Length: 355
Ligand SMILES: Nc1ncnc2c1ncn2[C@@H]1O[C@H](COP(=O)(O)OP(=O)(O)O)[C@@H](O)[C@H]1O
Ligand SMILES: [Mg+2]
Image (cartoon, rainbow, N blue to C red; front, side, top):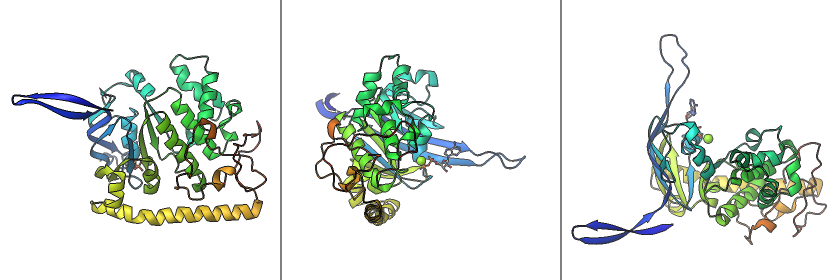
């Protein structure tokens, strides 16, 4: 990841370390023009990004936090080649992508994949899971890919039989697992996640976060992770950038930024985070208690992690132990060490997420 490089100078040779960059963003500006509301004047301009620069090293877990509307998704779209900056430069794997036409971005799709906030919106409801996951493989010319689909389902903690079902037959957490499996299909080096757990019930967030955490580690991926929720970013990222109104106002190692924020906006954001975390944990506990009393049935997944942000006691989310969003309640609230099969019927209502 870090290699030595010799730099020459008239006085002699010096050694320095050069970090191999997965992503380099320089002075990126993105202005949007809103539709005009008057016949005589053009629509107002929104300055979504006002000169953003950042480096993401290979293998780094880079978090971007900031309140809604500060430009996080715009930045991710530009990094993923889905939008072009008004000015500035973006390199992915050393290749300048900001001015490349769509048809020349094929290499980027193989290297960098996205996971979005709303899995239902990003999964075609008419396609079976096997076709959804295989889509990027087919685009690369790999046709006979069912074994790979099963492998990917297994890696995200879903049963191979899930391949024959449709997205609406899964819970929110399971659908996000399917999105992650599809993102991993072309074997990317960089995973870019835009609020991947924000649409999920708080109690399911920890499961999906832990899954992402484990996969990034196991596959040695570079991760760019966006959230408006600081506690979620702290859980998975080693470096964090705080954005406000289209600018990065503070950036550094996650612990440093969270423990000793310098910029007034970062301080404000961090000061609000513990309250949020406590509220999340409280709500989860309340939900668990209520559901346990009402139905006396809870999933084996959630019982182990009542705090959505708590790391599991025993990590090891290897393929065989990856937690599943069990769609079928187990008869007893006691956690079952063996992963429950996912017997969701091929038809019928979408299962509710584990409480
Ligand atoms: N396609 C677009 N057209 C016009 N304005 C946009 C467009 N996309 C984003 N914006 C504006 O840019 C700003 C940043 O949006 P976004 O990147 O989605 O923020 P975030 O992801 O942090 O919530 C917002 O004011 C938003 O309304
Ligand atoms: Mg967004």
